[in-house]
Image (tube, rainbow, N blue to C red; front, side, top):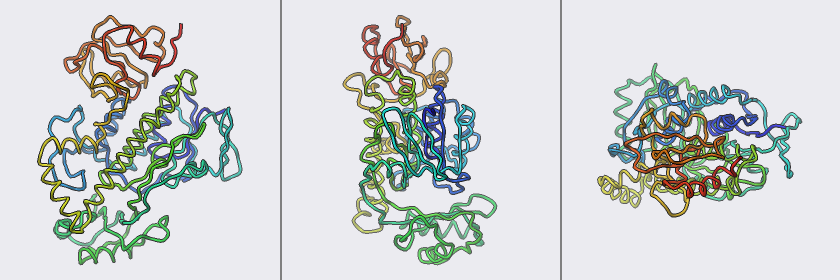
Length: 475
């Protein structure tokens, strides 16, 4: 029997597959498309996702294919400078097309031993106390202990489970594509600059060799939103907003996206779970979607591996929903707010001007950037030290960097006292005795996702904390 079937081979599914393989879990990824998509919806990784890649030893691969930016404008396109001294060793945004992110994560999952089958569509599922039966479009059936739906906003898995997906439907639609322009680059830049003074959902960015990434508001909402727009739609809308179509031609791909905002009523039914867009959809404002899915997978992977390995303490797997669903709800709210601020109506524009003034205050600017980049997240682990529930930034130690010690996806006790012990949990938790000037606590217990589960210097307190996240001790 397969341990875990993952429906959906996008960035969420591949990140989850990799996390599971770090723990030796037998993983099968099914994707209904025969080839990876060529559509580039996401253009980069935010700080927390960059940290995730660093924690798993992938960052150098991503840096080799991306470009670092320290720019503002991520909250509703309000142009503010990048805040100083963010609580991270990676204070930048990494510009990298989603197609490249998909490829690098797929390569990583494959290197770790995940099995990937493309052109395999899941059309049915049933479950019992021992596992899940997945039915494929070709009539074949597969049996697994667990199944995770990472199959996007129109998730088949979510629908088969009957999980509600309440929220708001698309009210505003935007066209997106890559195509060639005959207009001179200086003409394009001048027109875009003028239009964007009032319409932030408009742009034409040069990718190279005469190819541009073009974005323009659609004329209403399409009846069938699964169908891509035509080049004629693009030319019509470009003329409506800019007075010119720039001579667009030879599109490599065309797409549309809306501002629908929905959140799954629950993330789990029995042995089937949801992650990424299957659990939440929202407008792309702030560039948070792909990042949110990757971080879902990073939270779920080690917990599901613990369930497969039969060492998960009570409630560990349920903590995935407890922790990640509120994060998604907060992202939905901030994207709702951003979409209002992008409106050209007088009321939203007045609020936008007021918020722009408020963002001149460093604390406000920092707060919003930490929200967008997900480094401000604190899971509710109860009362305690301020670090409790937060992810720990990469800190320098005597023997190197903290994140270099987290490659294997295990828990880690970072001990500056030299007096503590994880005897009984050594198969799940690494014990590192080292000292770093950036760490101002005697010791910290980190979960595999880098969030701080315990802070202190008392062995008895540590022994009380370890079973909560890492199960019973082994003699």
